[in-house]
View 1 (cartoon, rainbow over the protein chains, first blue to last red):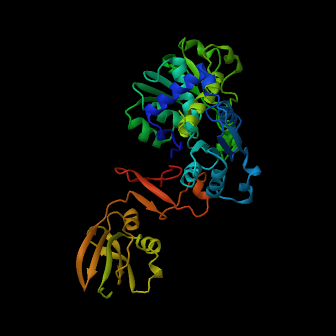
View 2 (view 1 turned 120 degrees about the horizontal axis):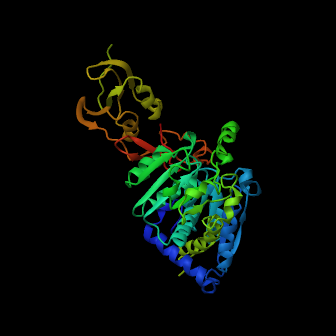
View 3 (view 1 turned 45 degrees about the vertical axis):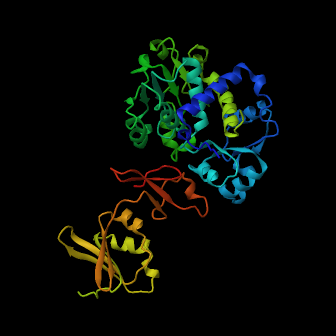
Length: 304
Length: 138
């Protein structure tokens, strides 16, 4: 049985195949509207989320399936002290596939070790968020037409930002990729990601404190939010939260075909005036997320 | 200082000074019913000072734990008063319940009865990472 805990659980070929299916779903939705009749997706969200949970639920409904679950730990038996493994053992009897988000890192891995149905990691703390990465790859593939030969700027919280870690992991497997790592010193990309991924894959990368320095060279600019929930110290959060704000003015020096992405939710890091710029693709990105999740559900349930 | 030689068992030698008690505790040698000697700060040509542990019984010795704590220690296997084997240690690929993940966000901090598992991810730098959250063990 296949689980998706880390983006590395999927080969490049599997990802490419899923993107192909997702694009086919966009063009021929009617072909897929009954693929998951009589199937149930459980969405177990031990931590609040809007986009990811609704995207999963919408994906399953568009495939003709049904959905059950909870959207915060307080409304589940976790509040009574139930372990992840016990919860998963039970929910496996009620559903055909489980998407789970949990604030503790490694929780989906524990779940997969105790589950009789496929587990999809919908985010575990600051660790992994593979379906966001699939969404990002789908967006890049759709907007740029290819997943190789790209210079990708990632900006903001590179220390705790799980979407960034997963994206770097995934994109490092494609040819001729370069990264520009834009962050304040306190939120730099962890050394283990640099050594285990970038150095190992011989990926060129540059580190900088400013957006402007490398902006003219970027094909993709991936903005991220400084996440309040990852900080133990409120003062540190306040000091760093508005470190980067992307504005129309700053974008004057960027390429005409730059693709601006953001996993959302946005706070202040992209000024709303940028939304009307044709290079802003973050709302389309959220839309692509549903289609790639539909393709993922089909793959995990082994439905052709 | 004289410590009796052992008839059948193990001598864990060349332990870094100060790590003898750590190995003693991690191997739970206090639970054995045989003679166990721990010598600290013994003279050593190589290290200046070293610790030594002698166990007067053929037990199921957790060599991975010793290798993780002190990779350059040596283990002598004693049978009928003679050293019959000298074991060289290599860093284990996986260690279980020897160290605890320090990441407060790790699932091991709340999930009951979950083994603390670390995997050797960088053999050159001796880096172990938590199997669950991938935090490095420092």
